[in-house]
Length: 347
Image (cartoon, rainbow, N blue to C red; front, top):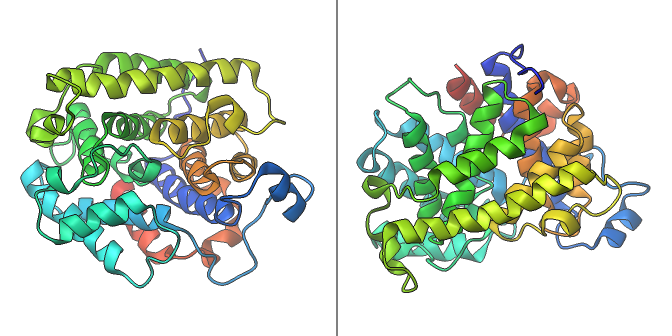
């Protein structure tokens, strides 16, 4: 087993995570909805490798919603409970939905659920119960940066928060489990976990959580699914689907084909569990080269911005902020908000 990478300070990991998320999102923004051949024709010879020569470099709804989640965490009274966090999350999501800057091809699930939240529906009725799109997964990184032992946060409450922020818009159990796994991966890397056996640790975590339903946070959500008879059966369905794609990830890492479209190995990432797996796969191809990791993610046939967003968050957490090109900082959109969030969560 590779020794943990514990030399990078927590503050650097938090900044590396959040800016990496934005950098990957921006790099993949122009390649989403393109085939691999189309991407290579537009960005020869191997896909986009640097941020656009614009000011600011624009991100998509992926970064916007990650900021919404992170800023809701900062606004909520501590300790975090469903009573203290629901309103800040609801307010942040509605504000994002109604913002004139919400013009970056946002997902219809998020739009529809936020419209219902704005109408005052209880969150478990506002959520789109059948959706496990990646919209709840690409925004959860700030939850992974929460420190266990600070503000009453525990490993289990962090998991519940990851699932709860997902549940406000995406009510499918796989969306909840995938968001939980993404936050867990970020937390693992913050603690210096080695990329070498990260898939195995994620599989073990998924198995340990398979029948844990966070009643205090998720309440009656499970009843929205007519196909299950208990909350444990509801959440187990989500973990089982995540375990299947994590096994695909494990096999893909063993073969490690860096030339083919990563979506062929772990999925196109339009759904939550595939976004997690393909983002992780691109990170694990180049765990010591952050630009190569997000370039590989942006050069993919699926949901390229979300894949690169997640890959950037993972590799940025692992290596720290200093690993990113220095000149990117001044050009990325929402730089000040990202800095504030990173400074607070990384403190």
